[in-house]
Length: 137
Image (cartoon, rainbow, N blue to C red; front, side, top):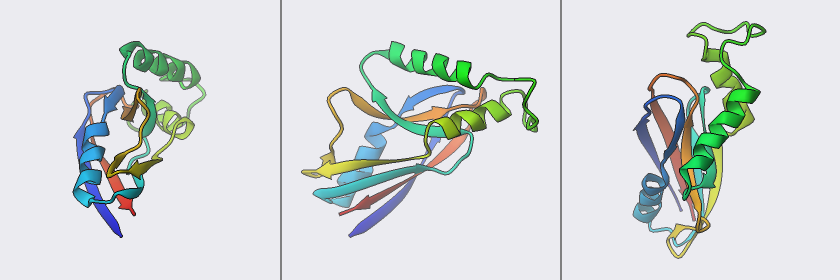
């Protein structure tokens, strides 16, 4: 059995947005008791990650790490068609991931106690992002 939904999220600019509840809602609606949830973002300048959901300092620190690895307006970048954060956003997306798999058991996501699924916006301005959730079971 498979079920697929497309979720749309409005971001407010660079940072992480917890989408765990929305993904869990798709899983609950599917009625799959044991299986997998595949979560995929349909964009090249944002990403998905699973990380700690208890301490907001973790989210800020993760963004600091990526800002050091892929700074905005690096003079070595050629691609800047949409502004000084354009290429940095693409690089950050490649360094993280656009898709995740989460196991399902007893009809729910089997995330750890302190884990959450996050949409990670890499552009400095707000965007509308589409996330495809495919439930297999």
